[in-house]
Length: 130
Image 1: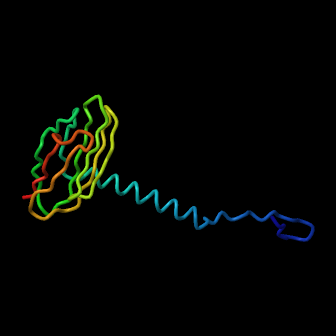
Image 2 (image 1 turned 180 degrees about the horizontal axis):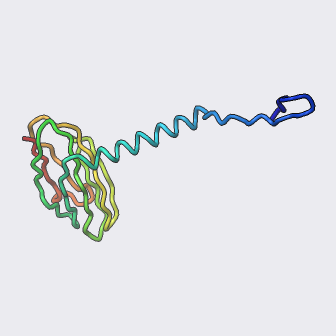
Image 3 (image 1 turned 90 degrees about the vertical axis):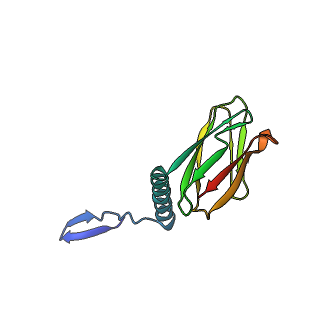
């Protein structure tokens, strides 16, 4: 810090400015984006999917075509699961008892498969966009 003169014989210390660095500004921006994404995901239409030791309930999810939505994933079993869908471009690995979610982009009308990769060939389902 350098001294700043105010009157003859008196000196006042200059207060340092706290300008944010580029990294600090980037981190603040990233935090705001994450907060906005989480808040927006909470307001989306949501569908529940239970994954239980190779069984998917329900095995069909009927959704509105052209609308973003969220699938709430609940691993109610005692083994790990992997929700996966190549057509939806989503993948999520979850341990026993874990809850999570995936946000799905607006879909064209049609059927989109999903499965629990750890419990194939039986654990398969469909998202049907209407």
